[in-house]
Image 1 (cartoon, rainbow, N blue to C red):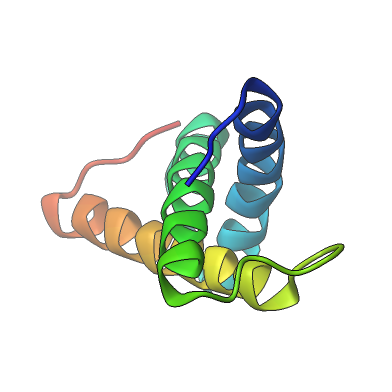
Image 2: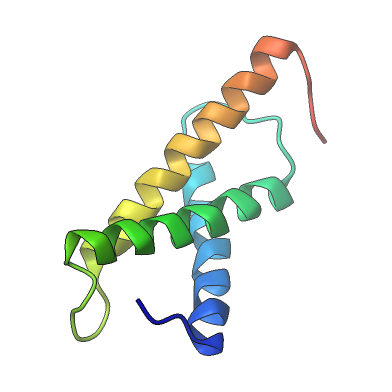
Length: 94
């Protein structure tokens, strides 16, 4: 698994977009700042890439829709978990 500087920059950019998509995919209001969604998106993008490479479906020419969908699902799950933890604690972030 080769990780280049350009690959990291691309993962960060895609992660920011995935964080926003993860926020939209979770129903209801999340009392979390947008930077936290973006941070979750970056983590989901990196984790999704690792899982896709380990599963063998990340080596396609062009855009890999399965990997992108996996990243969005991971971001949505992480946003839901973090938002749920904040609701249970009664913590609101603005």
